[in-house]
Image (tube, rainbow, N blue to C red; front, side, top):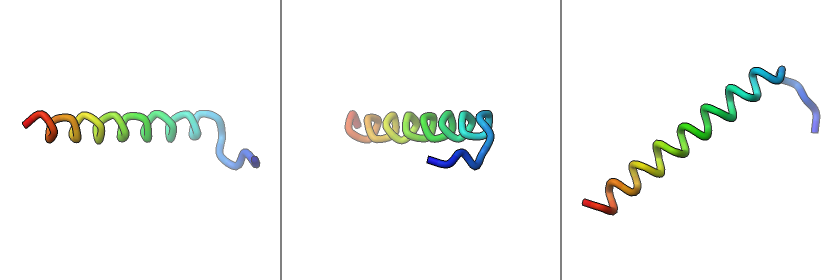
Length: 34
């Protein structure tokens, strides 16, 4: 794999996607519990 973006940029993207997945997972659980 080619590293086009710097390390801090990739780390920021990974954190953003992990937070987005966590928020989506919590939202799905909230809908299931109601």
